[in-house]
Image 1 (tube, rainbow, N blue to C red):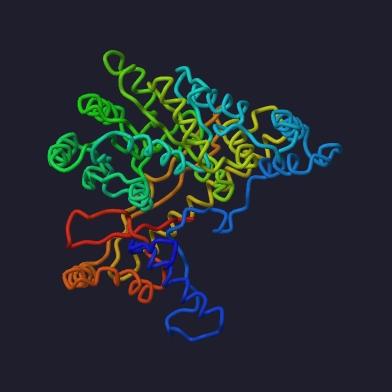
Image 2 (image 1 turned 60 degrees about the horizontal axis):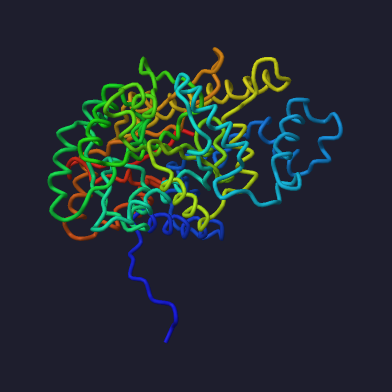
Length: 465
């Protein structure tokens, strides 16, 4: 008898799809003729800009190289600001080496710089390094907080948007929380309505206990930006229902964001400016990641979370939870420090840095335009330009364009294809939809994590990288 208990978990449709795509890719590499339609499989859902061929930012790689091999800092091969930054970061590590351990919550120096970044972003609202935790990617931070929510009695649940990030339901499943989808209104620019939140809360009370509400702002995968009024509505709702706010603000990189006349404001800032009785009552966890923004350093696995309005006991318990988790690699923390404190005007690397990010911004804008035109030229497909444009975050620092958010879009399948999907679902063969799409349209269509507003339409996520 095996000592390992057999699991009964069924793979998700996305997991089955990627397995199917890997099989086809392997067959193609072996020279096998699997289809007359194509000779390559492209994953157009990925937000990994480096896998798409985008070159890394030179400054961040130079700082990392200097920290990995300090002898490089002895000569003049690197600009003076690179050498200074690398030496400062090394001095914060035990033994002046990135090979040493750090606290489970991250290097104190990096946490302090993250706090300064948040305060600058929020117009001077204080941010304490003691309330900031460096995590091995933003999802690790989210899982840590969700584990805390599971400590309460009863069947705990979290309100999540529909559509949602495609990995969110798997995170909830892993930590044992019940997902409670609330639908975003597509016709209203993916707006969030209070009546829908109340409906979900009312219907869920009979079988579970809602503990938190998850928000993605800017929206993933919709790309929308919440207005201040919408954020205030959510905060009031969370206060009334005693819900913990879990806010994914991963696309934010600098202090101010404009998105087609929509200015980004963080949940923390709105909460602080609402005053009594909300500013010191509603509990909030905000997440950001190195994977998004202009850096796009997905493989370095680093992010941070900030806890607001939580007591010292919860901060300590969060530290304990993180201690038992995977610590953020030091090299990832170094890159995160560069993300929150990039080269400034007057620094030796500033001009090249601005040139690189401006070029990347121009390229992505061109990709967006090309992708929209291409999709709309395909028979049976429509792609809303607004979905692409609304997903673009132009971010400014000291008057210069320096960053851009993760870009996603929705592609609405034609009615004929939707009818096939509907029939397949009714026949209990829903898991076969995506592999067939992979064969038909020669790309990997990843679902949007959505139950969908109706069975007459279908969507999948794509990236314009």
